[in-house]
Image 1 (cartoon, rainbow, N blue to C red):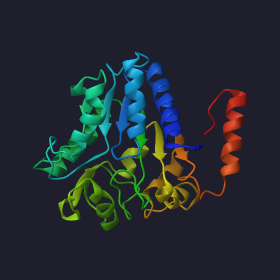
Image 2: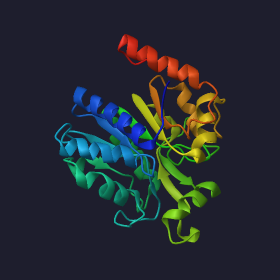
Image 3: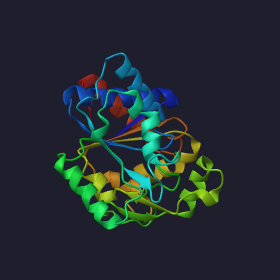
Image 4: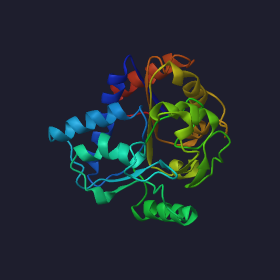
Length: 262
């Protein structure tokens, strides 16, 4: 596990974008797992700028999003398909047919979830998965208590998640109560994972995810079992970590040997 800590959100967004760029340069047809929410917005902004400057191309990249509200059409302003189109896909040279977001209107959600898992497998699996983290420690919509072996499925949203996401709707009653989400087990099959977190509100969840026990009550803690995870944190998000000096030592060692240390 790598833990990269910078003073500002802008700095961690640039660092994360540079990692994504390096992976695409190495593999132009990268399969990229994507997240929504405020945390990855800075990353997407930096990637858009790189694309406009022709430093990076998404023409061969394929993407799979983590989740989608169940019951919302893709053109709904609060749907995650709409979020991805307006904040990322519409501004880069990606083929929209290579972008997949769970279908929130699927009549048979069980059948769709099997289909989504199969599409990931047919693509060769996710090479690099981008994650954010909920204030209760969840990744994707894997709420507290989710099985650490879970697959893509329908999830009932936790009260804390509904409360946190209410700011994007006119009122809390409009927040969907269900979502289609990749499972923890699905996420852990990605070859590499990055997680971006900023702000004091995320500090308790980050501390539990990185330094706490592995537990289904903090689904992000399952990332401790993955061999290639990089956390990008601003100082506020990292403020409750106890081993910051060690993480800085490892980063310095990386610079000296010229290689990432997980």
